[in-house]
Length: 193
Image 1 (cartoon, rainbow, N blue to C red):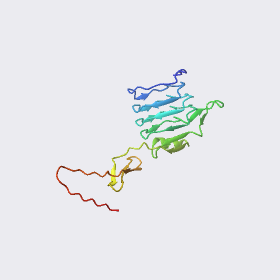
Image 2 (cartoon, helix red, strand yellow):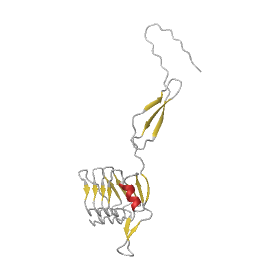
Image 3 (tube, helix red, strand yellow):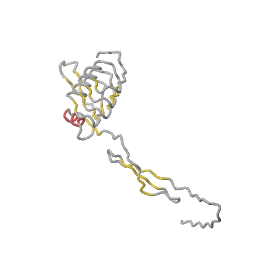
Image 4 (tube, one colour):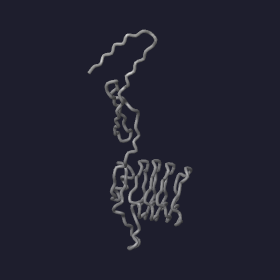
C-alpha cells in the first residue's frame, strides 16, 4: 500500500485473490491478472494514476468495490465472461479534486464485454460505453467440403465453438504420381480438358 516506487509486479500462480488495498497508491502502469486469481478485493489497485492497461484473464469471478478507483489513465477494460460480480465504482470513476467528496464518472471510459454478463450489467447500470468483447476463437477440427484432385484445388472449413465464425482454407491440388513395380505394365493416360 502507498508504495510510490512500485511500478511493476508479477503475481504468483499460487495466489487466488488480490487483497484489499494491496496496490493502493502505487505507480503501476500495466497489470496482468493471471487466470488463477478469482477475486480482486476493494481498493486493490485504487489511485494508481499511471495505470493504462489491465489484462483480466478468464477465471476471475469477482471484482470488488473501487478495485480500480481513481486510475485516471485507465480508459478501457476487457471483462471476461467468467466475472460474475462487479462492485460499486470498481472502475471508470475518479475522485473529484475540486469538489471534494464527489465521485466523477469518466465519460470516455469503455468496457469490452459480452451480452448477458456482469461486465455488460455494470456498463449499463453505470452508463458506460461498451462494446462486444473480441472473440478469442476456439476452432474445432477441419472438415473437408471439397476434396482436392490432380486437376482442381479442394476446400476445408472449421468453426469457432464460441462465436460460430467460420474459417475456410484452400487445399492444394494433388501432385500426379505414378508408382511402377518391376512387372510389365501397360499405361494408358487420358486427360479430360
